[in-house]
Length: 389
Image 1 (spheres, one colour):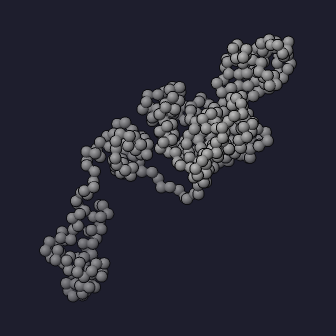
Image 2 (cartoon, helix red, strand yellow):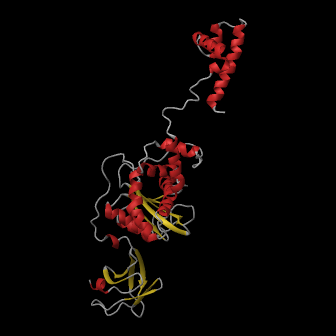
Image 3 (cartoon, one colour):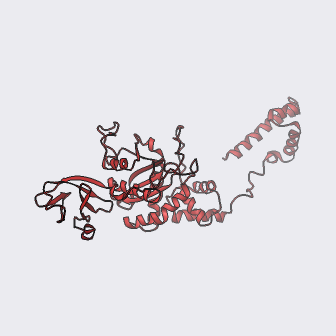
């Protein structure tokens, strides 16, 4: 029995008891009205209704009457069919953004209530204890978050999603899939931010081995012994900050919860199963729509980004490895043999220490001091035109 009906039956029983006491003159009308929580005039009206129609005369007829604001049954059925046929398993907020695109004009709360009543969506559990959220940065570019998430984004395939976002606005500047998160993927995310917006102030991430050296598991990071990534940020004068728990990265953790809920469903809806197509879909459809829906306004007007004018950015954001040239004038690097071509500077480079740089596209270059000796593709084949240049 609904609560409104239950309360009505209790009020009827209470009135009947008080009415009997008033009838035998145990109570006055004023006292009876006080017991029922009404005025004596209302009590007299209830007496007239009770004596003329019995208990039914005390019923509130509004309970069985449909509200004039109630949505038509056809509209509710259409909503339930739309969710069941094309969006089953989507959370309500994600479905609601598509519902609005299709011309829906009902509120989010109404849509959620209808889906929950139809048992198409489960009611979420209550929230836990109160926690105080860290305040956002005041301006865009003050702090950039980067993190990766391994997930089954398409059937039977696990990829890493790399996201680089702003702390002040939650705007996603870079977002793409890779086979495995690492130094190159982190460089790529940072490069896309700097190319589009400029240099930022600080970089916030977890303690992944490509971000930090950690002498002991669970201990503080080594801020003196920098990784390849840390050295590049130091060269760009970007402050690197380490997070020591998932709670400390709560903002980016919540973001990945949203992506893991939404992105696989959208990729499935678009019949995408390959990484190249998935990255194209992210750039053309998913990322613009996500930023439009979730991006917030910064606390203050302005920006902390500054233009990058210090030379070739990709010569900074690259992996660097020291090698000794062999007697055959070749450098061995990760199973590849890189032959140094003849040049006008030296007869040969046998036993000379050189530096191998690997760039974001997988190509490589060999440097002797500041001088570029040769450039190679990702397979180790010499690129003649770049070498000549």
